[in-house]
Image 1 (cartoon, helix red, strand yellow):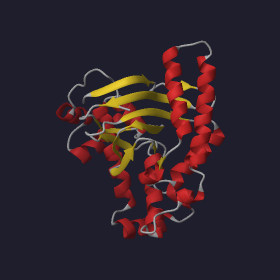
Image 2: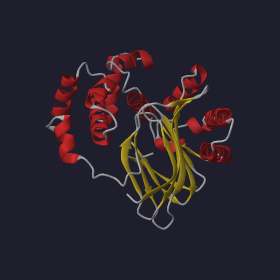
Image 3: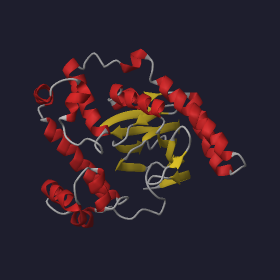
Image 4: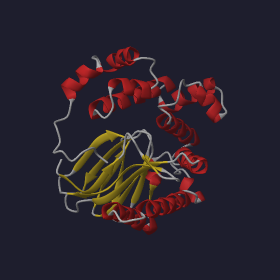
Amino acid sequence: MNTNYHFKLDYLLNPLEFPMLLLYQIGRLYSTESTLIDTHFHLDWFELTIVTDGAGTITTNGVACAVKRGDIHLSFPYESHKIETDPRRPLKFDFFAFNSRQPTISAELRRIVEQYGSPGMRLFQDSRIRSLIGNAIAEFGAGLEGKEEVLDAIFRLVTVYLIRNFQTPERGKESDTVTEPEAFCYRIMNYIDSHIDSLKNLEELANVTGYSYGYLSTLFKKTTAHTLTQYYQGRKAEIARMLVLEQRLKISEIAELLNYTSVYAFSKAFRSWFGCSPRNYLHCNAPPADDGEGAQP
């Protein structure tokens, strides 16, 4: 993979708690001309990718977005993520994965998820955030007295500046080329994606949107040529596949995450999607071992 992490801390399964947020991952990566952060799956965290130099492409749920020095890209929970560098201008970027249990902040983050479904709408620039995350990385590295208080203050400011960046009315406008039904269906898909761990059944969408499930189902099929069930099951299948290959979670933990009643029920569904059990699929498709540098950002 030719990946050089200048600095990297992982708390993916046990996030580090601060008063304002939960920290899942923070680090700095310097790419070589052939670096590829291959497609991987984020769990229940947001992530900022802060480009400090070079250029490349960030692909989110199959949608590619070109990035350059100064750009910041926001990823949502339960999205697939891939980063490719421009070989002529290798990427350097900081990354910051987080979430929040603080009610006001959680509500603002949910609003951003609902209003900014398209990955291209989540690209922005903010020198304050870039500087603050750089300071946080330096603070982790220094290990000085009062580090927790300094990091808490930094993360509070980052959260406020991030929310402000997504409060400008014109940022939430859909492109003129996107029809109203298409925009509505995209928001439905984004809601399914970001609630894949808590959505018990698709009928819940009626309460969320204020429309009957019959209306939503008809509109979705007419607009996308796929049923809501097809989209939902397709996303669960892809998420299950990536989680199995990443090997961060046990099969039983993946089954619980995706709301299956048992490992047997999950394995049965997995077999219907891919023709074999999760363990056999991993045996046949596991990627080669990396160079020991750890999980991908």
